Amino acid sequence: MKTKKMISALALTVCLALGMTTGSFASPVSEEGAAYTTGVASVDQHMDAAAKARAKAAKASKKDGKMKKDQSGKTEAATPGTTSTAARMTAVASVPRSAKPAGARGVMRNYNPVTDAAPAEPMAVKETHFQFRETLLLRPKTDMIVIHHVGIPDGDTSAAAIHRAHLANGWAGIGYHYVIRKDGTIERGRPLATVGAHAEGQNYHTVGINVTGNFEKEIPTPAQIHSLEGLVAWICKTYSIVPGPSTIVGHRDVNSTDCPGRNLYSLLPQIRKDVARKLNGMDSSYEDKLKKTNFLKMSRKEREAIIMQGASVL
Image (cartoon, rainbow, N blue to C red):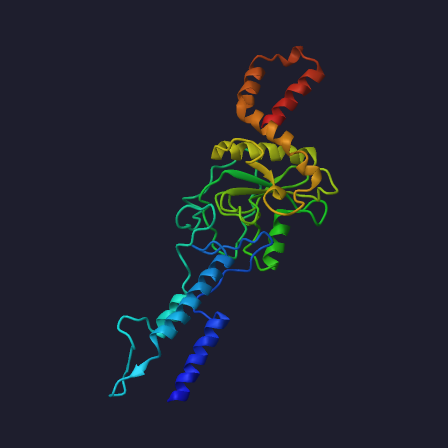
């Protein structure tokens, strides 16, 4: 009987040490360190909670003592009200549903595409309809936009290619909300209202935009900058974000990285100014100017200037 008790205790110790549970862990953390499950901020937070629970269970086990038998041979708990071994194992395996990630308020909710969808963008966005390995979470707040580049490989890269690469790494799927191609086409990544996986420690309050290319070597195309400024201006308007160095940032501003590359990062001050101009009534002033314009009396250069002004605000 003493041998059986020792074997049972040894088995429990091994299970706890190996982290064997009845629950499942989230997918591996992405390069930005953000993998998500329902109600759980990240793998790291889940494992921290599990480790604490295991330590607490082990301490309780030593304090309460082992199970003992009464004179009739039936098993009973050593101390009234103590939790059984099976119950403690279940508690260790339980996912902390009320986990609160940094920057989040309250318990995280699953994203519902019907009730939580963001407003439709005024510019064309190519829909991708990606399937994600995990249930996406609804972002609790939005007060920052993070700009990225693909880096390697150079050149044009589609949102679909990024999604496949992230899935191949065992992640939930593409971590960016938008991808802007060389010709200015904007492609959908994750739904806008969801928590992204693009900037470690900052995903619960930010929107991630990836401009394709390696801007340590390349230069963003005019079409990319035009689309980026229009998209950022609309996001700022939608979430009441005031354009500035603390709200429109490069990935390197929040994490240790070269992203979005020096040739795009150096343009951010001008991009912020252009976005602010768009938000300060350029759309309406352009429309008013068109109403008072007689194109028949203008030179070709003047007409082109008016048209280009419109392109810069749309």
